Structure formats: C-alpha cells, structure tokens
Image 1: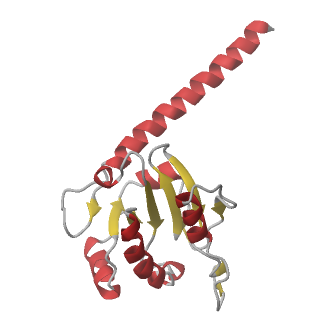
Image 2: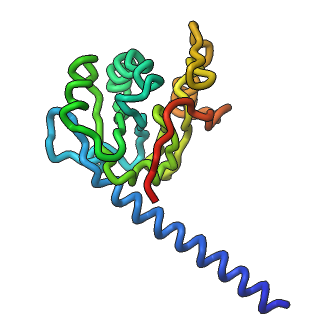
Length: 198
C-alpha cells in the first residue's frame, strides 16, 4: 500500500515539474516576441518588462465588432497609463497582416505598443480565450492579477449596454497599484473566440 502511495506521489511531483518546465520554456519564448513601438525596431517584450513591474496585455483583432467598440478605451487608456510607466500592449495573434495593423493604428490614432503573437505563445502562456481579453501581469511573480472583460459594456455578443456601470479592469488595476486585495480577479470575456492551433 505504501509503495503505491509513494508511486502516486512521485508521479504527481514529476507531472508538476514537467508542467513548470513547459511553462518556463513558453515564458522565455514570449519574452522574445517582437514589440512594435515606432521607435526601437529591435525591441522585444523583455525590453519592457521590469523584474518588479506590471504589464497590461489586451488581446485584440481588427475584425471583431466587440473589439472595435473598445477603440475609444484604447486611445484614452494608452495615453493615461504611460504616466504610470506600465507597458500596455495590444496583442494580435496568428498571421496578422502587418500593413492592415499599421493602417488601423493610424486611422484611430492609437499610439500604444503592439505585438504579433504569430504562434500563439503569449496566448497559450496567459491562457487567453477571447478577443478582447485584458490581462494585468505581475512580472516579478509571473502571475496574472486580473483577466477578462474590460468593463460591462457587453453582457454577451450583440447585447451592448448604453451606459457602462462596471469598470472591472480599471478597478482591478487601481487595487493592484494601491496594494489592496482584489475583489474580482476574473470576469468571463465577451467577444470573438481565439482559435489556438494544437
């Protein structure tokens, strides 16, 4: 009986270790994703993540109506967060069309950082599921402090509120910055499904 328990325990330890090794490998790949800033053409995520800082990632696509309804949020938030020295990244997954993305940014006057997650490495690491889905990432502990909806603008796809009454993301960010415990760490995102290849 004891030997069976020991074998089960050893299998659990080995499984956890294998998962940690896989996560570490994926994290290192994510650090080398190219960031488009308009200034440094060779920049990667690693250049922006400080060992003790936060970062915000917003998974986004230009062909999802729910995403496009948040262009105003991106415009306002990206300029405000620069003052807090927290990098804010728009994340485009798969084989995005580079020229189309540049035109999109120019059309709406969006100046934030953006990156192409061509092989879905960041989506896999953060376990993103939806466009749009926002993440507050703590780079010191490699943990997600909050992810999900930006606010309650959409109850579900096609059902939009006239007035936003809950700002889940901004409330979470303020709590993290003030060192307070989070009331909500996750709200199910609403939008277009991210199809991550196997």
